[in-house]
Image (cartoon, rainbow over all chains, first blue to last red):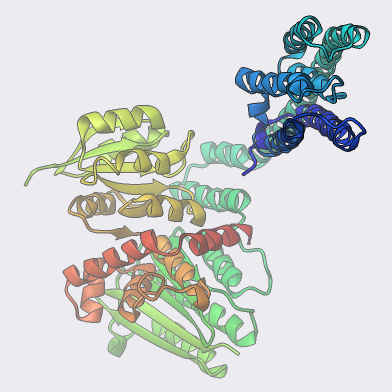
Length: 375
Length: 212
């Protein structure tokens, strides 16, 4: 599993450099090791050389793997201590093998870079000091060391640690400043977008809601106030949620537009529910028109403030229900005007092969059920 | 009969005082809150029977309140209210555990009735919510259907259609020749399905609907 998500880009790059040098150092050591084993004066204990090569190789692979999957591990003191341990082993490996030439090559420097990567100058200095101490011990104790070479190495460790530590510090600081600047810029852009959005909303509310409220304060008739409030509510709703009547070809939109129109014409509120949708064709248009007549009827005669329109468009049929709980009528003894509307609803539906059922009773209100096949 | 103890969570002053003035006998308002955090604290303290909950509020809205209270207090019923009817919000709050949903244009009498209903463990669906549920369940692809959860029985469908058509539970019972109790059972079972069925498909449906 990778947990590199929280690691800044620059750390991945620095880590790659450190791992890269580690691999180079390991290959360097391996080549010198092979040359030593195959040379004219093979070591007394060649097993130590082979073991060192294997340990260094495995350690380089481990470093690379940690960098890919657990990069934070590379930046702990205990990792650095283990890393120094392996390197000190390579320094003494030729002595343990009983040789008078060392074969560690450029590998120890990779630990200095690791220290720099982990703890900047402090890490570079600490690792360089540890390696220098080990080198000096060897210089004094062991026969296989070369004073000129090894004293030069001490200088390179210390100087390299300080220089690389300083450079990494500069790079990191620069990167931090850059990313802070980027964040500030993004923040500023977002806040500008928010301000624009707010301005747009304010403009819309001013044109619609505030105007309506002003009109409401000036109207004297309560019905007008209610009408204005409803129209405004519908407008605001469709602006906010975008579920207003929009699509010309949509049956659902046609039903919603129809009830909205009735709400504008009469002081009623219509609970409109539409389930599903189909393409609006001539028969379905007739269905909506018949529904409009039924709704007008309810608004005009039922004597209610609110009634329901429910439309359902399936694969085979579209249905529309107009239901009020108002003063119904006895279908057997209908007053002429209401009968006329009932008949015109029926005829309209039958012309397109649809069906209208009207149920009404004086106590239970009226429900008009309209059905039309969907083609 | 003991009064139903109700707690109101809503960030609109007008609405809170309106409900206080309107609810009928047998309903006692034990507290109000206008923000999510204080609401959670006060509800834990006063343990009402029913929480009236606005779907739209800052800091996560009604859903957060339900999610923080419901696990510890399954006996508290939530009735969601909103002015907006935006499908994805309503479905989200019901799926979080609300026992019902009504719009704020509901009449005081109907609101009192709805409160009593959720207090005794029934579900309350507004016509709008019934429409959403019918729409949602019919739009789930057949391949993804878990027959026990993602499908409504013909009877449940019929009950929902009647609710959408503006029928009360009692009127539905009369129409379908079943008892009010049976109507309630059907609605509760729809609520359960809505809360348990395939989360992914339902949210996708609500998302799609928003885009129309």
